[in-house]
Image: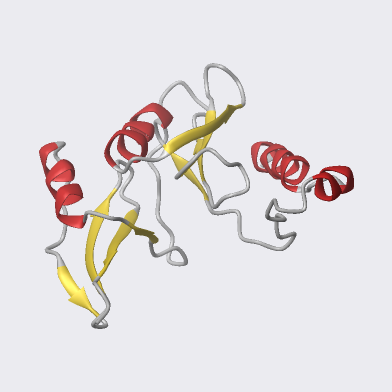
Length: 162
C-alpha cells in the first residue's frame, strides 16, 4: 500500500504544472487535474512481467521504485509520467513469489495497438497463447492474450473508417 501512495504522490508532484511554467509557455498543453492514471497490479516477478509488457507489447519503463530486491515499476507507452500508466507491484513478502490470485472484480486491460497481426506473431513466438483475431463492433480487430501472471489483455486495432 505504501508503494501505491508513494507513486500517487510522485504523479501528483510531476503532474501539477507550476503557474510560472504555465505562464511562460502558453502553447504547452496543460495537464488535466482529473484523469485516470492507470491500474496497479500485483505480479509474481516484476522482471518477467517487464519482459512481456516492455519487450513484447512495446511499453517503456517510466520509473522503478521500492527496495532494490523487490522493485516495483511504472510502465506505459512513451516516457511522460502524466500519460496513462500500468503499475507492476511486487508481491514478494517471503523468499518465494506468491501465486497471483484473480478475483471476480477485475476483468482485463484494454490496449490499442497499430499492428495486431504482428503483435500476435511476437506473442506466439514468445510462447504466449492468444485468442483468434476477430472483428468487433464493426470498428476494431480484437484479440485476447494473457500476461505471465494470467491477467487478460484485450488488444485492439482500429479498422480503417470509411
